Image (cartoon, rainbow, N blue to C red; front, side, top):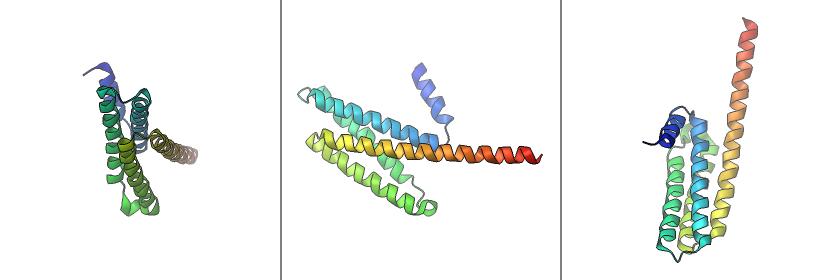
Length: 141
C-alpha cells in the first residue's frame, strides 16, 4: 500500500455519512472528466478507448452504489427524486459511452456538481445546528 492509498483509506474511515457522499460525487466527477478527456484526445488509440470505458464504468458504479444505498423509508420524496436522478444519469452515461458524447458527460458533471453542493449545504447546516446545541448546553451549565 502506498502513502496515498493509506491517506485515502484513513480519510474514508474517518468520514461521516455526508462526507462519504460528497467524496463519492468527487470521485465520479473525476472519472467523468477523465473519460471526457479521453474522448477529446481522440479514440484512435485503444488505450484511450479503454480509459474512457473504464472511467465511465467507475462513475456508473458510483451512481449504482448511491442509488442502492438510498434510505427510501426515511428519505421520502427526496430519496425517490435522487433515485430517479441517479437512474437517469446512469442511462445517460451508457449513451455517452456508446456515442462518445462529450456533451452528455458535461451535463452529468454539472448535475453531480450541483448535487455535491447541495449535500455540502446540508453538511454545513448540520454542523451549525450541532454547534448551536453545544452553545445552548454550555450556557445552561
